[in-house]
Length: 451
Ligand SMILES: Cc1ncc(COP(=O)(O)O)c(C=O)c1O
Image (tube, rainbow, N blue to C red):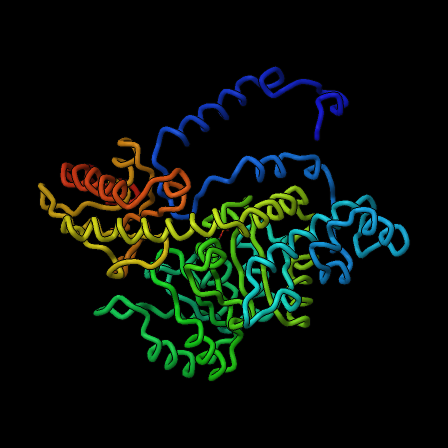
């Protein structure tokens, strides 16, 4: 365990050395306890994960990777510190700096525990190669594109306005600038993915990469259908389960590993770990391209403290408590969608089987005749103690004027709230949002909604 005497020059706690920052940390901790946080991308990383993140692994540079051998070793072998260090002394490693003897174990252990979390009949644990170095989800996605496409190639993903992520080809993002983008949407009538239309589009445009995975679309995809589409047009299938990785581990969302060519996810959303991302594949050649695209392709030194955080999070994720948490998370989202619908509030996409509930606030009858927008709705709810984010819904054309707000149940489920509580929250939301008098004025940037 870290002791204070290990500090060389600036000895003392943050309370002594930077009291204002200590105060801000305390204020944030209080905010996180006092408010109901329903941002679907957020969850509460357990203290054990945060201890790993704040550990001395922060102090180490580790450009490169551990030995390929250790990336295939069992947790049992990786838990034998003496064996690992003896091997390291004899053979050294692929790192660019020395001093990574222990970091090597930590990175390989993180990768192994990730593989254990995602192993399934299509992908036994030994077949899974995990890169745990991507700094975040966006960096991971761009690295995968870079590994398998060249500038000007075609990328296909769900449109940003209909539930996709910025990195799925939005014009505002490098993905939309570097590649030719073909976006699929949801069916305007059913608000569901129309696999026949996606197939037609894929055959017409022959993308090099198809991304299946979403930011606000609330239903699980059919991985087999995406696989068939990718096979038919010769594309690489990338599953982006940034949001739903924790649900996959908990067994309440279909596992794409072994079906998709590459699976990417963030470690800080439903997974409940440190801020970071992981890229998985079961193909050694693809794994090598991915490793190269991360380092030296787009990143320098990784964050070894994050390896430690991922390893801890994935140890916790293999417990029965974690499985129950993920189950409750989905149960709560379903209850919330039902509670909104029962109150006449439009649930976009017609419901959910994940942790996400998107509602259309522009459809809530307005006292002034001017439609309520997501920004004002989210601001009001924040004042009332419910933290959500504005979100575009199918039909929107400007993110600033998003008509929706997005609720997520990971954090409130961690705190022990259940379906009845979701009904109570939906009631508070309804009271708040029907009480607003929405209006707008014209500002320098165009229409500025207020309420
Ligand atoms: C589907 C999807 N992919 C990728 C990302 C990017 O993750 P990050 O914010 O860590 O860059 C997100 C983040 O919300 C996401 O929803």
